[in-house]
Image (cartoon, rainbow, N blue to C red; front, side, top):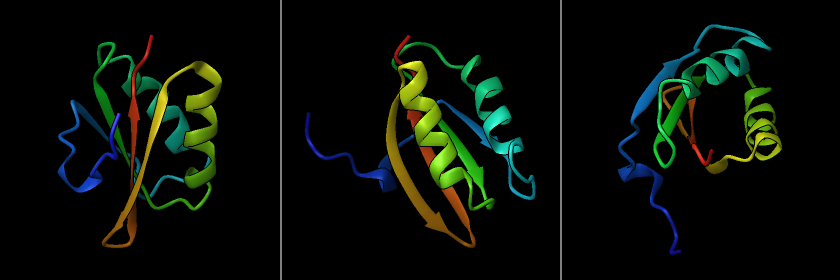
Length: 84
């Protein structure tokens, strides 16, 4: 698999957790994952600094692929691909 260009990813579902403090973005990501099918991509918008660690750790723990993040306009766009 080649390098993924996060700027061109079209997420299948977007969860907006901006303005929500920890553990809110992670809880929103868990709920949002229920709205995408295996192989689809969930995008989480967050401006909580803990999300940069929490989301990748959670994705690995439950068996999804953390694709990376982009920082845009004071918020992070985190991408997770559902694997199961």
